[in-house]
Image 1: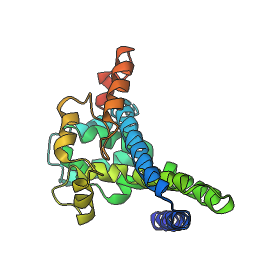
Image 2: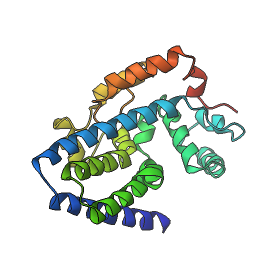
Image 3: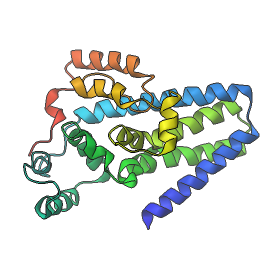
Image 4: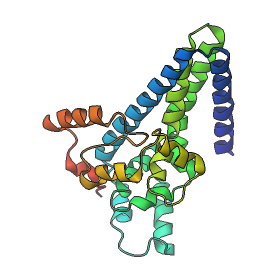
Length: 234
């Protein structure tokens, strides 16, 4: 019920921002859409980088799930998932999903949509969308800024869904169309990340990967982003 309510509010809010963009649209709005999409890609990469290397909470025994050697469709494993995940919050579930999908890439593609986007919508996209509603309807701001804000919000909200689509054999036609247009990256491009786990963290279109790669190198050289954070511990 809560999920439907939150998504209903988000869709209504985003719809109001689409209307605000339509009423304030200028040729510069196209540049705003592109800039917002770049910023969403940049955000996806920075978040991906930080969560890949953020340690899972200790004492929650998530390592039992990560290193489970039996069938992941067994009743034992599924019961363990329910028990372990009941003791961690949405953010830490997201952190675990980032780590779990490295040795099992297709696992992320099987996640329900809400598990993929719920944290992003609740923590960032919905508050920002409502803020843009207020600003766009109470003050006359340029269509460029409305477009940038809308593109950033939508790209950020669905970043983890786009990530999951890179690990799924079948995707909606709109995802395939966006890949052909260069608005979403291909699985082949994303494989460069999985080959090393030290580059190309962006998961939307990949436009920001050159910048993020430099940021990763700078942080790594200063002793941050240690390999110990890549796997959960007891």
